[in-house]
Image (tube, rainbow, N blue to C red; front, side, top):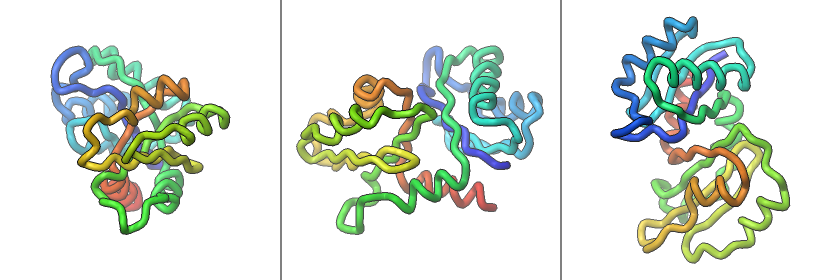
Length: 177
């Protein structure tokens, strides 16, 4: 099955830098994964595997740590999960499409913690939840953004990574091809 592997914490410099995505593809292919493709430098990988999500996340994490030295969280999503995330997008055409962000996690989220965040006022920023991801609307004119990965990780006690809706739509197409 094809899956999307999202890396959390890739940085342009420093200890969590991935020097070249072509090298990342190479080491994952050498580890036995099939049809490995990367998309942009920030840590997005599509590959084929029959491993379960927990096993896959651990192996990808360990390979990157061993071969590159980057200690990155790894979040795995299937095509079905991406389709649901896209279809459940709560923001209609009245919102700036480029400002819609989808937040993914491998972790279970406690309902009471979600409700606390949902009931928090973020001025112009909006937080919503769905079955497969969390949603953030972050308008350009928000002066000080409170709603972000670090905030959600702290409040919800989970590991997250965020991608824009249009990027997730591209991944869905790549997984379907």
